[in-house]
Length: 287
Ligand code: PAF
Image (tube, rainbow, N blue to C red):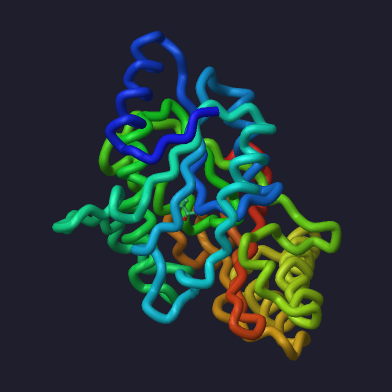
């Protein structure tokens, strides 16, 4: 595995791989790699000749009072994990390399970027869309891999790819969970033991909504109530949002369509976590 810090070098190598007729798969990450990330890497390895993982803690997607400084960083452990997965290139640029002096071009996915997580984290998706567009231009992937856990991010990036005609196929991989159902996240490490236990309420609320859906409930409002009631029963959880929305537009659904995205976000102490599930017959084929 080569480790590349320079954008010019990464772009040059990507051009060479493409000129040789080989396919490139990109897995964008911010490091602190867990099984969720590694499932994306394995999918990329399965589908492509050349796999690039980017590791960059992107400052523009963090708000002023968020966890940019605290975000876990362990380059050596991440490097070893990626080597074991037979990744071809680890692209790990510095902040100055990505946002050179004078940088002032941002991408804003306007309406989608202000829904769900975008409503609680106002500049978040501007930062995500900008860095992902840069990564696409540098790594020039045929396919890019994202986790379904970040469902709103998936919707924003899908829109970005369509709107700006990026010749990239998005591959969205299932949520990977701990044995008690908690969705894997680099931020789970912030939780103390009580918060860690309480955080499973996110998954329980989704299971509850799934059960009601299986019993025939199709009202978005009724299913949202199920989520909120379940979340309210956990005293350590502070709800950020609970929503039943269209997975493309992220707009609330009055009656459930196929597929529907059921999404929750909550605070456990100072840690904000998200989770979701897709409902409907076609959910396995989505997107
Ligand atoms: O999902 C993430 O880890 C980040 O939002 C991403 C896509 C790597 C962009 O910084």
